[in-house]
Image (cartoon, rainbow, N blue to C red; front, side):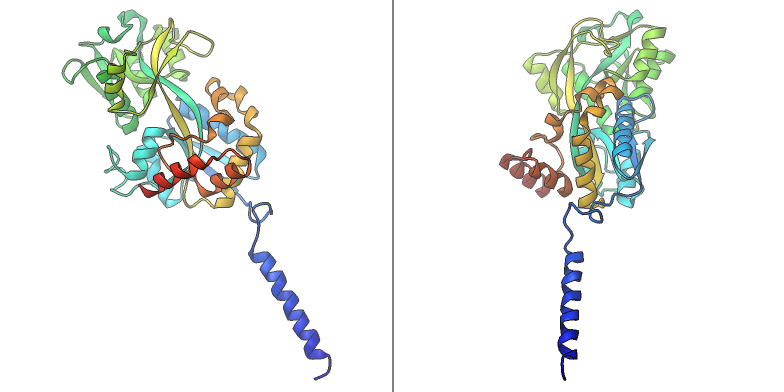
Length: 348
């Protein structure tokens, strides 16, 4: 037998140890951190706040990761959420309502998703959106009392979430169906503002502060956000339709249409990913946005509020991606309370 069998045994043992090292790869290694070379990020249509936010997020990720993020404007989550399951879309930007009901295929998402919830998970909670109804100054509409009998864009076929926002706003203002003229548009919030521009509606039932098309409305007709009723009773009616809190918004830079202090709705935007995205890729995406957070701020007025303090949200409506959770725990941003929140969300 001699020394040959012993040498061979040592060689095999070394090979096995090397293979084990390759198999158990930590997050910090290059191979485990591989991000897809191209990723599609879905948003609302061009001119919307969500499209602008998506462009900014995509730019920062493309700059700081070995990937190319392609921003895809769509009619809304009803269009792109089905593509998450097929892998055509890797990420998307949407609000907390659309995330919740898209994941569970309810509250208007049943048909679009064929009864199957979209497999989305949260990467970061981000900017808090300020939303309300918007009109042109020539209508004389300023508050809830002025909406009765007016033509209001109340149904947006591209987003059940935006449609729910209008239901919340009209309920806040004490308007029941039949107390205003309903207008339907194909698309997301920008199409509602376009209807006001075209003269086919008096009010866009849902619009966000910072939307590019509101500047166009302001230039042509004058834009005016409609102040909501901030009373607890009125806000309870609002929340029966959409999860948001009341926010007093003063005129300021980037707040076109806010001509005087108004009460609007505030709720978070999310960056989400499909469950098929690897834990390592999700980890790197969140890490890049955290470490290069300040690079977002100059890209859009609403991205100034996409701050680290908002990334982990105890009021999240969908569970976080495991890769994101790992990063947040490593940097101490994930509390024991968030473990409870995550567990409850995963059980839904």
